[in-house]
Each structure stands twice: as C-alpha cells, then as structure tokens.
Image (cartoon, rainbow, N blue to C red; front, side):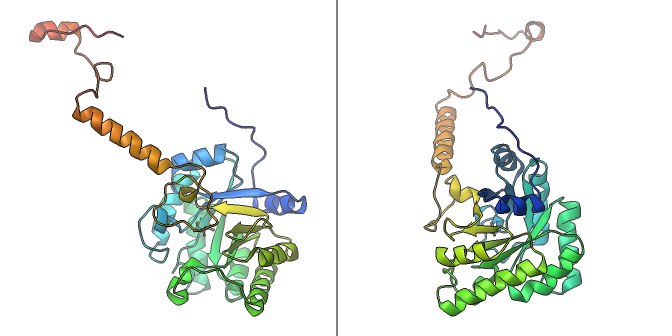
Length: 292
Ligand code: KIV
C-alpha cells in the first residue's frame, strides 16, 4: 500500500496553539532529532516538534541532559528543520546556554532561531527565569516555559521525582506558571506533576500546558519519540506508553541480514551488477544469465 500523506491543516504557530486551547482542542507534541524522524512525525500531523535536550539521553548516550551543548542542539535543529513543514519547531536551550546573563541568553536563542530556523525556544525554570523570558520575548523570540521536573537540575535534585506533591510545592508551581505566562511564554511544559496540579495550572493560564507525566488535563501531550516507539534503553517511566517496539524490529532485521551475509545468500545476483557482454568477451569472462 502506498503511504498517503494525511490532510495537512494549516501551519502551526505559537499564536495558533493559544487559539486551539481557547477552542478546547487537544494537541500533540513529539521530540525529533533527525531529518527522517522529523518528516515522519510532521507528515503524521503532530502539531509541535521539539528538538529537546533529551537528545543527550536518547541519541548521544550521555547519562543525562547536562552535557548537551548549544552546538549539538543546533546540528540537530538544522536536520529536523529540513524535514518539517507544518508543525511548530521548538528548540531546547541546553544547560549553560542561558546561565551567564541575558545577553548570552539572547545570543544562544538567536543562533537557534537564525541558524537553526527554529520557530521558538524552550527553557527550563519558573519565576527565576522571568527576566530572561521577558528579554527574549522583547527580542521577538517565542518562548516555551518548562516547570515541574527540570532535568537540567538533576545535580541539585539528586533524582528524577514527581514535583509539586505538597500544598506549598503545588502553590509554587502555580505561581511559576502564572509568572511565566505574565512574562510572555506561549506555552508551558509541565513535567512529572500530579494530574490534579496540572489541571489546576491548565485551568489557570490561557497559554497551553504541555504535559509529560502530568495527566490527561494538559492541553498538549508530549513524549520523547524514542520512548513512544520502543527505541529507548533502561526502565521507562510509568507515563510512557510504547506504541511500537522498534528495538525488536531493528534487531530482527540486522540479525537476519548478518545471517544472510554469513551463509552467502546476500547479496543475490539481482542485488548486484553484471559486467556488460562486450567487456566480458574482451576479458574472456563467462557471464551467467541472471533470471529477472
Ligand atoms: O528535552 C526534552 O525532550 C523535553 C521534553 C521531554 C519536554 O524537555
């Protein structure tokens, strides 16, 4: 069966996501880090594509997101950009790219937007990032916030745990969300937050919330692509639903190919090229007739 491109509704933008929330629509976001994945995800009609710093975990093999650099994100944003037409393309600001002052933050974000052609950037943190968010928005850069579990803080947190589990912590999360909205973000990631708190925040802000491990009430759901398709290693968090097991599929393909090579059945004559008759005659080489 030929693959048919689904109907392509209009291009997604930061304002169109806010309008979709106002209409009560549910939206979807996935990470992508390379051209083929970006094309597949975009053509499947996913609304937002995030080149997340989860790149460090799932593609580059770092133990966490802390080592990821701006240069690394940029290479992947450029690759993804070439594969995306409709979805909003968001680039993560990696750890260290917004920690040394507002001017450096703007410089980092501008590289992602100008060189990478991302349409928005995401940065982790709540009230303490308000000044930076305002500055970026002032420079015409669309910003996605990120609160709850912020993986770039792993060295302070010690472990990836659900955030906002006490009344005080939940109130702080709500204050973070309101402060980010006030600063001008167009959406806010809520990572590993109790569903009741995610709902309270979602109902308190006009910009869409982007939930990961935050329950069904968020306006947008996001997952890491490799988790969704079974290409990740190690124990998956409980919020991940695997819709495919590409690890098995790929292992099977690679194993069968290696077997065929070892037992001499790959490549067949149809899978290789023969010498033209004239050259064979001159070289005195006998040509076997290949059945087609
Ligand atoms: O880096 C990432 O992929 C993310 C999403 C999980 C929200 O921050």
